[in-house]
Length: 293
View 1 (cartoon, rainbow, N blue to C red):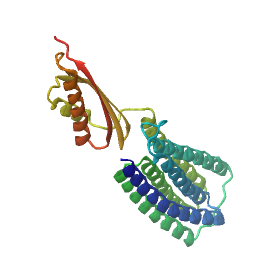
View 2 (view 1 turned 120 degrees about the vertical axis):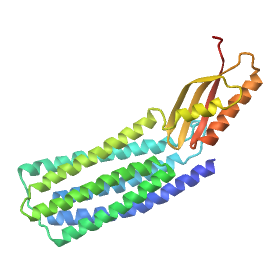
View 3 (view 1 turned 135 degrees about the horizontal axis):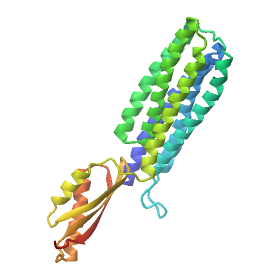
View 4 (view 1 turned 90 degrees about the vertical axis):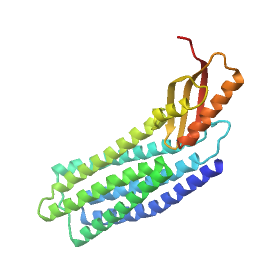
């Protein structure tokens, strides 16, 4: 089990390292040419891509913690560290959002006319295509490996795609003689980034605050009722990450049943749930005597 977890996180680490190199290459191109051309929206988009790279580093640190085996202080393992560090990516996005707004708002009152040429379009279109490929690859791997870090970072990159597209539209508008659209587009970019941060906060807080896990409770009930000796059930509860789900429930049996037989039923329920529903890490069954009507 522990070896499987280490291999799982080894795959995620390789994906993050590959994405990190691409994000920093994209960021360098946008920031460099954005500063040369004095285009605030392009520079802001570059810092957004730079934040993508920083979030990859945060993800790598989080994976390092999450891949540690269970110990006396962490009997349930360390996998929630991945969720915790995905929350840190959300904090980083919120910080980037506020700083871009801080730079963009004064430009509404004091516009600066950027110097736009064909190279501006080449940089933005090329980096947009790279971002699309990165987002699709990372999201696919995030779903495949059920990784909070990868799906959170893919959400970050998806926001980058929208912002890059808005920058290209802005470059066209500036070329047509509307430089005021540059700070307007920059503000829109900041709002996209802020929305990405909100989505990450929402998804991560569900896991960290033990909201009900995404699992079909009706299916759990059907499995439980198929076990011989079970007369009723109630209080099915779930929590945890999509790839690390914990279940507990109350099962009623005959008051005359021996403890040993009730224990066998409890084990059978646990094995059946784990076998039929993927990603169930642990099942706790509370055996109760069924009260007479």
